[in-house]
Amino acid sequence: MAEEDALLREVDEELRRERLEKLWKRYGNLFLALSVGLVLAVAGYKGWQYYQRQQAEAAGKAYVEALDLVRAGKTEAAEAALRKLMQGGHAGAAGLAKLRLAALLARQGKTKEAIALYAQVSEDKTLSLPYRNAARVRRAWLMVDTASRAELAKVLGGLDVAGNPWRTAAREILALAALREGDAKTAVTLLKQILADAEAPPEARGRASVLLNTAGAETGAKERPAR
Image (cartoon, rainbow, N blue to C red; front, side, top):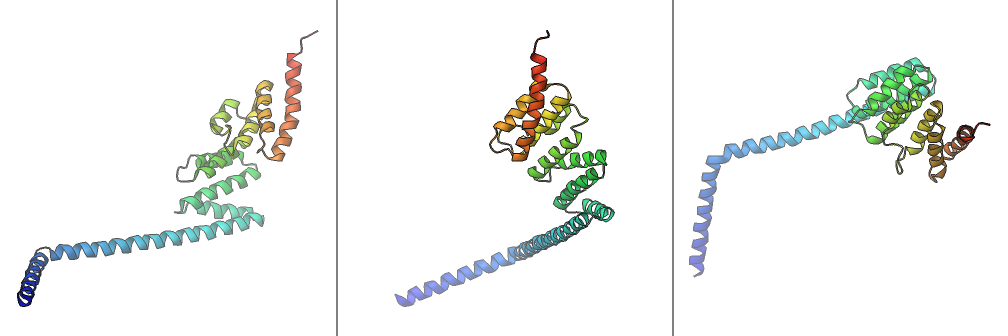
């Protein structure tokens, strides 16, 4: 029995070997092609990852260098460096460069160009939402003295609601616009929302308190009957 079992195992192994040889003759080239393709795909992916990492590191270094120029007061050089980053291939660095350049231009009184850059950042879907919302708020601050409340509400759309981290800034901007347009009642409502918000920054609450006195005085003057 032992000899028969051994013979059967040998025959079974031989049959398996023959089947494998037939399969290899039939599909061996295809198997090799798939294997080579897989290796090349993995190598390509790893190479792309390395390239992306190198690009990100280079862009980050360039951005830090541009910030150093800003801090050093070298405005022209900083502007040139930021514009170069804006044209680079790294979307995140380009978006940050636009934000920083817009702030630099605003300080120089180049308001229209700064507003245009902030608008570009706010509409760039490749950037994360916090950057886009920051651009919306900064754009609105630059527009607060000239744009209508309706325009500002469109720029800020949805940021002035409870729970949004930008709600205090959005409410303050809209309150200022309402006061400028003579709508003291709306301004009072918005300013009271700021004061009632325990998470509102202390400096914003201080400004809201001062503005509320002004808006309240205007509202009272309108509501007092003429004698």
